[in-house]
Image 1 (cartoon, one colour):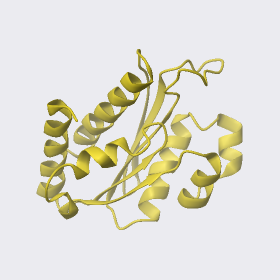
Image 2: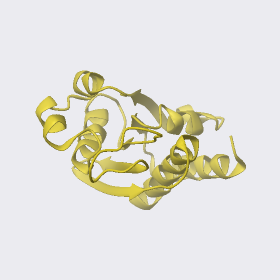
Image 3: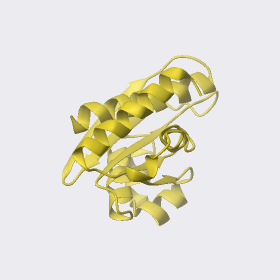
Length: 160
């Protein structure tokens, strides 16, 4: 794990602790990378509740209560599904704030309008949800690393 990632996860933990918030994650394309990064920090049990790695559509529906119709209509890589993932993670955990990632890390999986590197993010707290769509360049590992970093940077902006 890079020093940049450790520093970022440390800042996330400090910000969450300062506000008395518990975090949960709902990850698809990152495969638990965000949860791994935050749990690298000693004492993270004070501010990290749990992580859902919902790689398949079936697991998104079963574990996060996402409508299969929503996924069929918009695709799992959409801001709407990312928002539903974050809300579902909050509803199925003890956390106060959630972040979600869903995307196409590559090298295959591109569809019209969604090239490899397309990632949708969501951050949720209470009724407030912020979503974002980015397209990252690079190989699978690079896209996943950029996604983990961006999701935590976005969380810091969202809670501060």
